[in-house]
Length: 329
Image 1 (cartoon, rainbow, N blue to C red):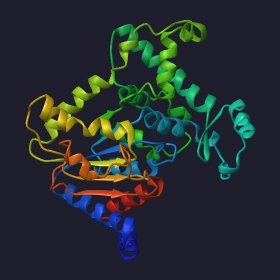
Image 2 (image 1 turned 180 degrees about the vertical axis):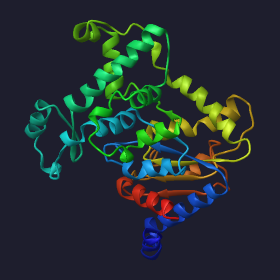
Image 3 (image 1 turned 45 degrees about the vertical axis):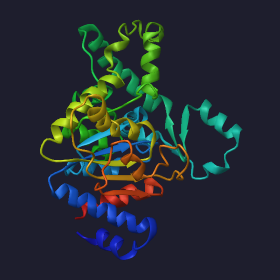
Image 4 (image 1 turned 120 degrees about the vertical axis):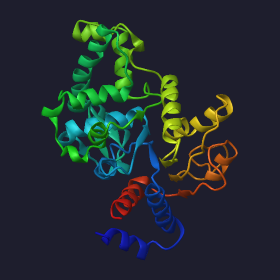
């Protein structure tokens, strides 16, 4: 205990490295005051296997809610059931377009230096989640994307396919803790694309039956409603902090809940009580991913007193280090 923390404190003294220490210390202080943290996941953090450290953060109550892209929601599950079939490409920068075509023909979908196998990951999960979609369709039930993923895990529909230790799956940990997960723009994902195809005839062609009700998966607007309720409930007596990995919709969607509540709903509420973003996006004109935290003050998201940090670095390196530092406290 203390070895990782001591190493980081001793060596990370300046620039982005120093911010890693400052942001981690502020995260710990924020939690020790009884507050909660939302983590937002952009990019391909699940395929980068962030679950190895994020799952433990969830289990130890260091993370209390997650907003992520549809890709991050599903790709942790893909990794859980098909890891042995992933192919790593350490020399991916040297691939020619013809090499990429060869990967396509093999059903290997490349994400930087690794590939997600079409049949063992995507189609394997499609066959199982289809059972849940069809059941909800027949019963007239509706769920958010993460609730269907929780059903997959809790009902044991994919357990026989596990190829990693489930302790390294952040979705398994989130399911055990029943964390709320918001997935704005879920249609921008493999399973979202498959779901739409099933409503437009693919089901009949492949399975003898279509999904009839496209509305059985709850929308982003409904997600904002539940996020507003969750935020108001959890800031009655304490505060909620914001730990953002990357940018885009995974970060922009949830952070907007505060100005929505205050400026549009006309209900007074607390601003986000802590903010940290890890991003390699260069600070630039009009870029959300590259916006400095101070800009969020003008939108009514953060206050002058909100502890705020931006670490301009690779999240696949920095996030596990920060999580290790926090867990090592």
